[in-house]
Image 1 (cartoon, one colour):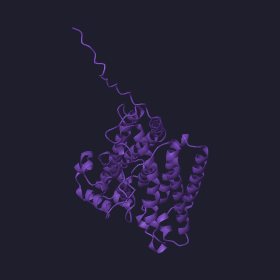
Image 2 (cartoon, one colour; image 1 turned 135 degrees about the vertical axis):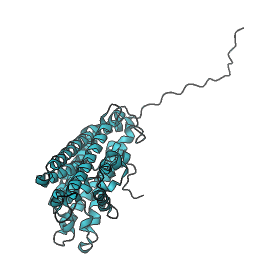
Image 3 (cartoon, rainbow, N blue to C red; image 1 turned 90 degrees about the vertical axis):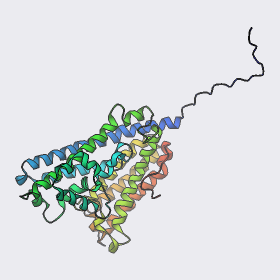
Image 4 (spheres, rainbow, N blue to C red; image 1 turned 90 degrees about the horizontal axis):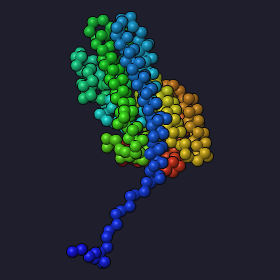
Length: 358
């Protein structure tokens, strides 16, 4: 017997598939552009520099007593240059396993780098220099600031590296271990970005990656937040504490990499890196806004170039301090313009970052 259809029965219609959000699609495209034009090339350069540094330490170790410490310093500075270009990126695999802090723990708390490096130098145990040990040891003793101390700290660090007995050879082994660790971290980060199931592939497919972001749009938001936070790093962390309220209150030794004289150079490279990242974002921004940002960047670079190389000491010198203050003002101007206009221009919102202070 045929079943009669109830004329009063209303069948629920299947929900229509959600329409793709054009803004989300555009944001994902921007994230991929920033990844291809800025992030991956920057990490490739970091790998090249840290691997060259690792080789320099191996070469020095083979002929330690006649080796040229100047070559170690040159390799360190090349690696530090590459890090200054990558320092603004805090999205993605650099956040895993404390990689960011392990690479360059700064600002340091309570002289942590000296204490951690001192423990390594007193250890004499090669097991403490393995990747497995360093992955679980203090972040302060295994990155660029620790290498800087080996190469520049004290009355005659070169002589310590060449010293006879146990101290010299072990000090060189520590340098080798740290440089090897830095190269390994760099390779791991680049690999996580570029492998078939890595970060770039996830962004290209508009998918999430290891709970660090949900899709390409969120990746774009995080990368833009990195860009703005980079200016907070330059202004609030690298400059304000050094400047203090006046020349008498300046703190030259709170400056980044003051031992190797890199404070001003790191800021110049940070600015250059920020501009490269901004241009990858701003391709779809109004021409007038791009022109204004280019002008502000040019002014900031000019002011930063004019700041003394010994920026920390200059901050405490009433005659030279105005040049440091001028660089601070110019950096702040770029930060304000980017934060106020770029998110709206490209349709990407800003998110929380570790320098927000809340």
